[in-house]
Length: 99
Image 1 (cartoon, helix red, strand yellow):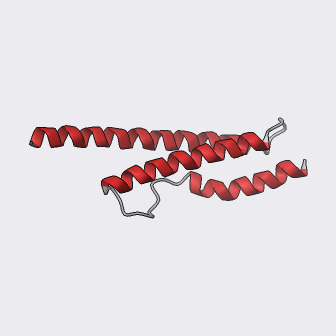
Image 2: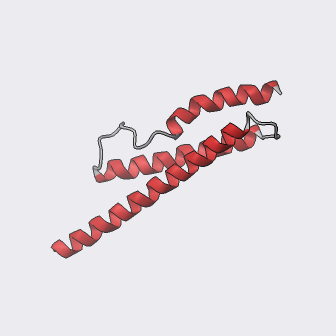
Image 3: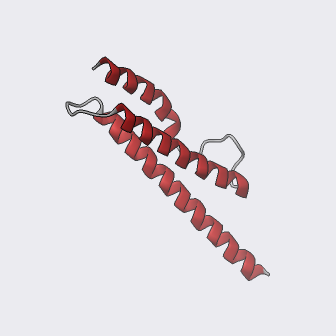
């Protein structure tokens, strides 16, 4: 039974690492696009919102999986990234609309 438990734990850890990487990737894509808003190239508010949503969904999926596994207490932040992104999107949205 110890071997089965070990295999299960390694699979769970692998999945948590995969979800964390997805959340980090989505957050990075969002932050890079948000930074692009401040440059000379045209950007799309719709695309910014879409990337923000993807980032938030990925982060929520990761947090939910960690919480279900008891890896950390509910409500604690797994990574700095998409949570701070919400405030940035509002400022970016105002800039895009002002253009």
